[in-house]
Image (cartoon, rainbow, N blue to C red; front, side):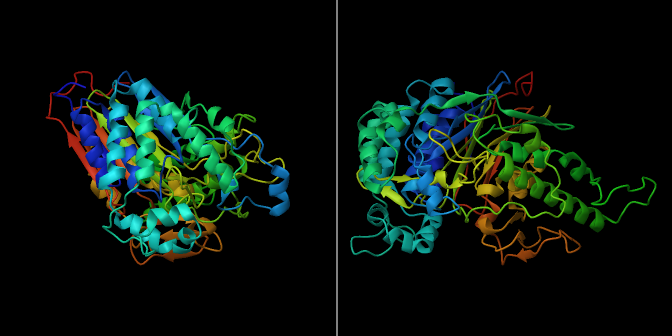
Length: 540
């Protein structure tokens, strides 16, 4: 990246923004900056992401091509499916049986090799090591997680060592967060990132997994490979959207986005059939309620299709048509989701003025993942395997070397006027959250901060702390006239369950802007001096 180039990045923590700026100052591009932010977040946000989690990203190249990087880990080759079925009808929510191979480090390496600047990843990992050794502190979000998960932390020696002081008291906001073992791992990875899978780090991690009771072995770690694949594509009236393919729930997002042009024009259909075109138009409040009902219904249908149809293409090709064009629930009860995966994810988005853009999502799934922090490495291990099904014949049923269905859902959008990279925290509700935000962000005149500040809603049950299918609404997010057909619970104010969205944009006139969600701890960083717009505008 040249000295007069510019980039913008959005992330949910100040340490991530500082790391991104350092990468840009070293000459890094948008992907380098995103990787720097991602590495820093594994140090300061162990409740949401770590070296022991997974990664899915979308990258838009300056020539206009888009690829998905899927680094989602698989179940152990010697997983005992019979024993899991005998113990319960569901996968356990946390614990050693829910740990799949972590994909984050391999995903970083694939991104750096394909899109990054030579040597930047190594420098980034050394910066992250210094942050882990000397500079990390407890953020407001992490402090909330420590308070809420005190019992879980006390049950695991590694988490206890990480998140309590020498007297055994839980760490509070602003307290130092030293992680010397993690710092040593990061320095090792700076020299050889593949040592996480085939080397000294892999050997230490495999031994820690064995002691914790996980069936994963060094051979399972060594077998992991990130994938660079074609994304899913949706063309609406004025925007082309890209999402990640299975095992990501990207198809669920595209199913929700299909039809949002009509929602923005206020022409969403009635819930019933056969509306006469010569009827007088409804009042504005009625149109708003109707549009909201339409999007809520579409999101419910898409979510139910995901729960029935999404699986790993390594087993068999998922029913993409059913995922992208979900049949209406028609009053039937959607599948019951697993327990709530709160605090599950971090999203990082970045664009530079060359047209290189990235939406990167990394995660430990539930808060503190599996509830296991390996004491020898300081790595918090995710519980992505809890998303497997134990139901015979289900597309997501667990099996040796298979990957579970993934909530990670990055998105890119491009029109003649604008290139957008967006992503969010929010677990299974990520498509719902993005469907409420990204169409508005494609308006070049919209203020991204104002869009992300708008109140939002999510639909769920156990995954949002409700016993039955419920619409959980921030105040002002749904009109009073709304009749969604399910209970409505209005929250006292903003809620983390409505997601932490990060969005950045490049306009055809060369303008860079973006915003970080006010529900999180972060912001944006804009690096570089303004330059003249590229004559060809947004690559098509």
